[in-house]
Amino acid sequence: MRRLVTGVPLVAAAALLASGCGTGGKAVAHADTANGQKLFTSSCGGCHTLAAAGTSGTIGPNLDDAFAPSRAQGFKQSTIQNVVLLQIRDASKPMPDNLVTGENAQDVAAYVATVAGTAGAATKPPSQLGNDGKTIFQSECASCHTLKAAGATGTVGPNLDQLKPAEAIVEHQVTNGGAVMPAFKGKLTPAQITAVAKYVSTNAGK
Image (cartoon, rainbow, N blue to C red; front, top):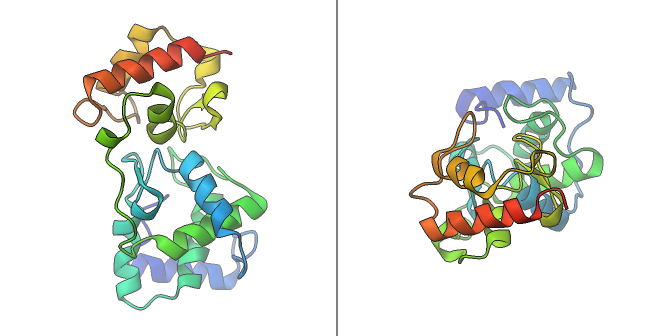
């Protein structure tokens, strides 16, 4: 999501939404935030930090930090919801446009608008994820990569089912990062990196 979600830029975004320019329609008043939370965690959490969702991605903006000043300035939740929806539909790279669409996009926008910047539940540290490769992948990698075994359909990074990387390659990439992918050295333990690398290499393409 773009970094236009704080302070005066939010006013500009709200004005654009009010005019209906290029939005594909405004956010709806009654969306399914439970579905929005599920979709956010699987499709967005690897790139964004949102305390209430327990996500700690660093590729995109920290949504708690982005929206907290707007809440403090008195912006309505509906305004924040519309801005989130706009940025889902017309995203800045590396986030693809329309990562979620239709009612799903409405649900994600409503969920983020409900919890972002509200000092929600503390983010679960990666150190508490244990050494289960699938759990680590779903928490840290699924929103950016496609891997059928993990139920992941991310499009920011390579499709791992197509790539079928060897364990050593995955371990090196997770450790050191590359392009838009952050390095997980120091964030995940060596044992966790080994576990997720083994999981990916074993399950990619299946």
